[in-house]
Amino acid sequence: MTAMLLRFLVLFLLLCSPVVAVTLEVVELHQPLSLHRTDGIGETLGEEDPVQAGVFSRPYAVTGAMPEDLVKAVAAPHRIATNSEGYEVDDANLLNLCGVALSSEMKVNRLLVRFDVGNFELPEELDLTARQVIRLSVIAVERTLRAYFQSVKDEVLSVSIGITGTTEGNAALKDLAKRFRVGRSGGDQEVNQGR
Image (cartoon, rainbow, N blue to C red; front, side):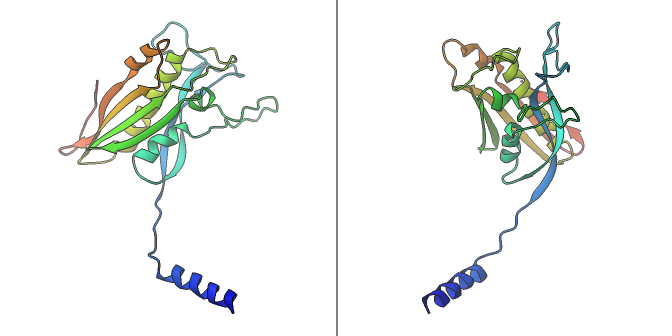
């Protein structure tokens, strides 16, 4: 009798609860990826020699609050597909490899994006600097947002990217902070402003 009453109560609650719709959208996601253990050459970052890392795009199905969860997806694990038996890297995402936390939230019509480098640790096999890792990560977030808002009309998003968790030894990373706007305003004119 108790089991039957419990089943009825659960069924009643399920039928009476509001239907929740989940939007799942396929987007162009850019991620900062390591090319270690390959012969690949990535971004130059304005330096003479290219680094063995780069920002790459892929389709990604994202759900949740937009654009906050879209930005958080930049830190999603990325296993590079291969036909080589000798290449086995579970996650090539620099944010995960180096312990950088990525967060985003909307505050008064501005998207606040934060890279927390408090647990940053550069693995030995990566021939990169902390500055290069964060620069590539900032580029990935900006490219992801620009791709997403490319077709959005009459909506402009102000974005503020900051670096938190720095110490005396890596405080210079804070100067990689950036502000820009994405989207279109007043018809078809694209906002392409960065500071």
